Structures are given as C-alpha cells and as structure tokens.
Image (cartoon, rainbow, N blue to C red; front, top):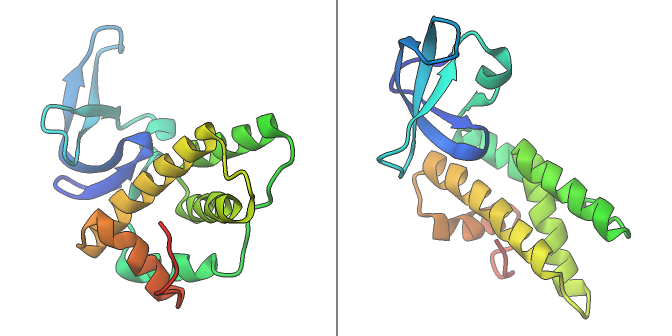
Length: 171
C-alpha cells in the first residue's frame, strides 16, 4: 500500500495526497482503527478518511499513472471504439458505469465515442451525454496533467500528438 506523502488516484475524488496514516476513533466505527488521511489536490479544506482495514475502500486507491503508462494507454485505444448502444437508457447507464469506474482506458473510449458521435450525427449528442463527456474529460485531464506535469488545457494536444492527429480537434 502507498505511504505518507505519496499521491494516489482515489475513486471519484481524483488525485489525493496521503497526508497521514494513523489510528483514529470515529463514533459508530467500533473503536480505534488505522486510517489513511487523504487530501484531494486543489481542495485545501477537504480530507477523506479511509479505514486501512477495509479492502473495498482501500482498493479504490491506486497509484498515479506514469508518463510511459499514459502513452501506452493512449496508444491502446487508437483503433478501438466503444459500441454506440441504440437504447438511450442502456447507453446512459453504460456511460455512467464507465465514469464511476474511473478506468482510464474506458474513459478514453467513452470520450472518443461521444466526440465521434457528435461529429458524425447531424443532431450531435444530448445535453446529458455532453455532461458525461465533460466529466470524463475532466477526470482524464486531472490525472494526465498531474502525472505529465502539464496544464489540463494541454492534454487534448498531448493525446492528439501521441495518436498522430495534431491537426484534429479534440479533448
């Protein structure tokens, strides 16, 4: 498991710094337990307390991707597409599950799917799909920008360059 002062990607909270790992007591938690104390990047007043003995919650902490892992990830989705489900409810549920899972490969496929659909379809995408697209882009931008040491605004160009699409519009 990661240690104090390391950064992790934690579930829907995004990039967090492990501020401390220490025993704490919370009402109704059954006595003193060891907790990871996480501070989301960019949220000075927020703390997340993760019980170290809860594999479901500690399993949501994962290491930050390296530049090499990001590059491999981008290339791994180059010629793949997420299937566009014709049923709106099924499609929305699939997209929400992808967003909740925070798997970068699936998020990149989701972004690509929605972006291509907005370009191919005469009607574009729905407002709900546009919101899901923005959320997926925000998740990717946050981790990639943090890991690569570049601004979130540069992530779209970085991805396009890796895919050999420098002149295309995108994320």
